[in-house]
Length: 286
Image (cartoon, rainbow, N blue to C red; front, top):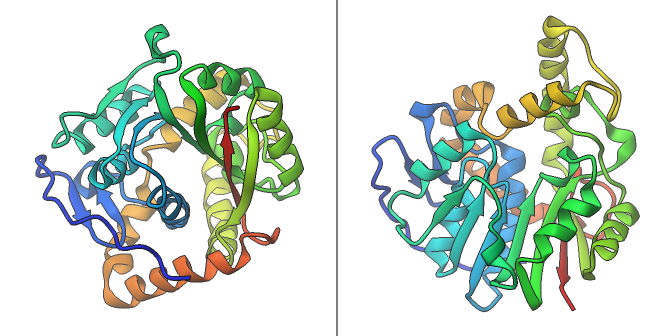
């Protein structure tokens, strides 16, 4: 499958922000770069968004905000919510050259039925009442609007990375689809992403995060640690890229760049499988 042409490169206003044709925006000087798994998900999401009519987008949990810049460059009108102060501040810098993009602390009542698209990636797994959260977000989506959501795949693949990131759970495909339907969506597809590159990287990340957690006092099972501790780690997980920042020069060198391009293409051969470590769900609000 050939990916549609990317949006033209645009020089960010903030000198701490860079833009790359393959990897989008980064903030190396501020300690954030796109991790490989983020890039695999980004490629999956942007392939879909490029095929859709332009309109108003609400992203819940935008993290560092790199995807907001991608969407704005494609002609969408993005608005975002990010509750973590550090991530919100970084996202605002990331999109400073797009004055039409706003990053808010919370959802606003006046947004009811306002948006054509609701996006939320790697957020629901952090929330105890995931059904209630998604249902509340969907109030912002107009009837006939579309939701694109992602979560980490396969409950049995819980690792130290999930604990480090503040996850409550991982999802099997049928559970993710059922969640969307309970919240009021009509699911059109649920794709698996990330195989095979994510499968190579995941054990390495788990090993590094297990060591980090051991220094903090141990690794808890799925949903088994303190809620306040999970919330604190969730706030860090969207912007803390210590290891990735050191590796980013290798990713952007020619061999790394070619490897990532190959990974983008290969993962789309396996979207109907259970081999990758993430799901992207595409659904409509009736």
